[in-house]
Length: 148
Image (tube, rainbow, N blue to C red):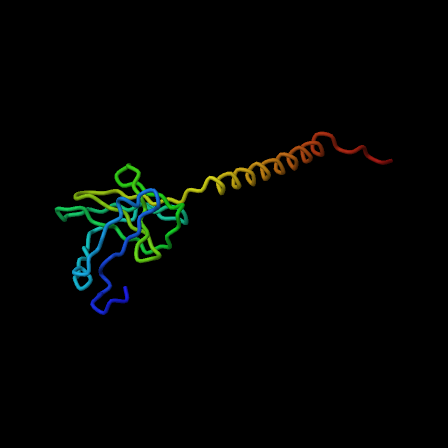
């Protein structure tokens, strides 16, 4: 990135630990090249923990879809319904490999710990709601006796 011939259009990728053997190698001859593809895309779904994008790679070879959102090891992705590794791109972002032709990419954040915590909070809230409904029901169907 600090090379004077770097134009900013080359993506530097680091594979997740379990995919280190698939990490692409970029040589210095590509630093000065503009290899960016401008592909049509459509955002199908977007929220804090999900992004679904449909795109058509009209190039004859595979390409990289670069998403400028902070990389984290718990981000997962599927391309056309198949699990694919999420590469760390340019030291901080995400990228996945897409094949020629139409591609549907789904990025999602998956943490078992957070899912468990959400379940506990949900059950806690449901318990309190049940207690409130029970107490209101007791008051509605068993009104206190009138004082004379």
